[in-house]
Length: 277
Image 1: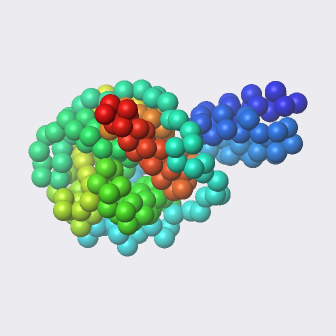
Image 2 (image 1 turned 60 degrees about the vertical axis):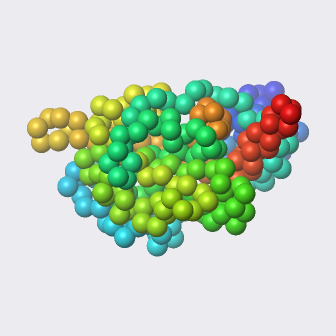
């Protein structure tokens, strides 16, 4: 029974986008492992069977031009998990970060790698007009809470960056992204939050493919790619070398766990720096 539950826990953890959770559960004793595995099976089945949301129209206006800070109350609550202490575990390297070119809020073309290296970085994909409570608002609420928590300790905040990259280069122009970001994108804050978009769907697709972010393409009236939509919510954690170290799905978008993962990577940096002295 224990071996069967352990295998199921690992499989369900992978399906929900958190292999580390599956490995942690697989080390539990038989009885709690069985109960936890049943919960994981239900959660993974619900995520797989969830029907795709209808694609918003291309002419849908951005509804948060004054910045999104007032939102977040629509985000659904998630069951809380007990996060292990920072530094008590290792986050293995999953893959190198993607290459590609993006646009910042000033309309400058910059390498994405410039926004995913140099600091521990959380990268998310979004739309400025998304209203799905289990989608972009949930992700924004989580990132905003992490930002507030990290900025309370400036020496930590200065080593962390948040990046929000739009799926929709047609609607989410650099000007729209700047309005959406509001004061969150100010460069004089310890924790940087970069709001980016793309020049075209064709330039965004290789970035998404490198990260294993499945999407569908919506065509405009002329039959040309207009934007990417219907995506599974994912949040990517990068180390300061631009390598992906963890991927969070909506089922495990736990602020305490993400915060401890950030701290774990920072402690790893400190240990590496000390070893070189």
